[in-house]
Length: 148
Image 1 (cartoon, rainbow, N blue to C red):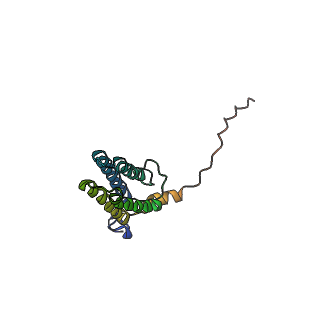
Image 2 (cartoon, helix red, strand yellow):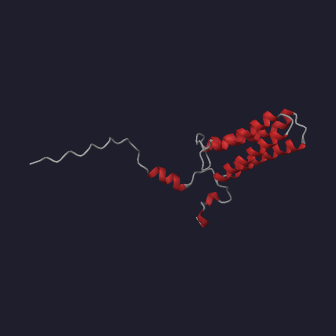
Image 3 (cartoon, rainbow, N blue to C red):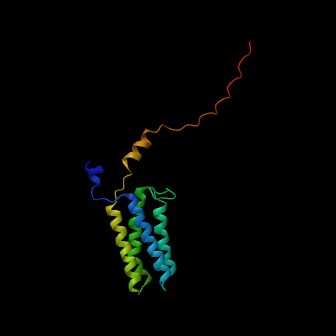
């Protein structure tokens, strides 16, 4: 473990950076959708879906950790495919809109390939070491002393 990194994690980006980049790509699509005159609702929806994907995934920047990392990776690739074909399907003619969508698609593929998808080892060890929590009955009040 050189430099505090796992050997197989060398060159990989942490998942929190992955989430941050997804949030930024989603924000970029929201801005581009609001700016563009064509298919505003579709581009804004794509941006909102990227933001939701980042916020609903099991990671440090998540608001609602409903989606596991394996599903997140698959959804990243689906999102990249949708972003890549959307200029053709929508018949966009604005160069900037096409460039933004294609760069977002390329960014999603890059993120899916370069991310370290494993949760931190410390968090995994902590979860494994925690005993199962069972509800404990309320403690009974102490009995009054018996007078003699």
